Amino acid sequence: MAAKSEKRELKNLGYEVFIALLSILSIINSGLSFLPRLTEASSGVIDIFQAAIAIIFLGDFAFRLYTAESKSRYFFREWGWADLAATVPFLRILRVFRIFRVYRLLKELGLERIKNQLLYDRAGSVLYLTIFLGLLIIQMASITVLNIESQNVDANIQTPSDAIWWSYVTITTVGYGDRYPTTNPGRIVGVLLMTSGVALFGVFTSFLANLFLTPKKTPKEKAEMSPGEASAFLLVEDLRRLVDEQEKTTAALREELDAMEKKLSDLQ
Image 1 (cartoon, rainbow, N blue to C red):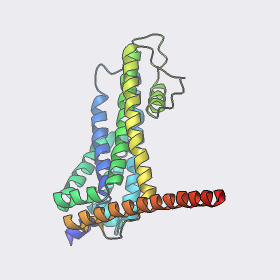
Image 2 (image 1 turned 135 degrees about the vertical axis):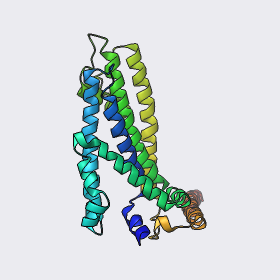
Image 3 (image 1 turned 180 degrees about the horizontal axis):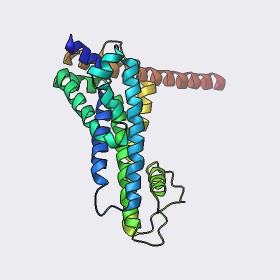
């Protein structure tokens, strides 16, 4: 019965890993704030991201509370109160409980089932990982460029909001040009950021294409699939996509053939 309850407590596997990674990042950020060589503006970037992570965690708490079969059980026995308290800035250390809970649930689920579920829902798992990497890269680029540009009195990027705005505009490859690095090391950060943006948004575009083009999955619970079932399901999906492509190709050839026959009849 306890194992069954833990399975219901576990959300989408990719989502759980995403929340655990955010928890780790939040704890690391708390330590980064005390680095002696970090500028005041760079510390401001960390504060902004900590506030954004707190909002995500508050939404996660509301989501878990809403979907819990027993709200009192989740709040008191499944550490829901710690999830809520962890959104408070001076209680961030409680986010360790989120990491521990994800570890406990994944251990209960088993390595083989984790592999099957990631294989079954690989697009969704990659999406969560892409979002996390995007947040991480924007934060690190903002901190780095502020530290570098602070050495130039005529720097164009001087405040935390300047740095985050520049990082986001650069990683999306929009490039408004209102904020830009004025030092060579800062430009190197920009080159790395643009390259990362092309890769990340390529993955995001692929996810959207998969979301709209892939047939709807069966209602069978992902976590309960055996290795053979998962492999068979993926094979059926690939074959279905192949058949669809062949049908489209055949239809296009048929249209060309009809057009050629019409031209021949007109010549006659």
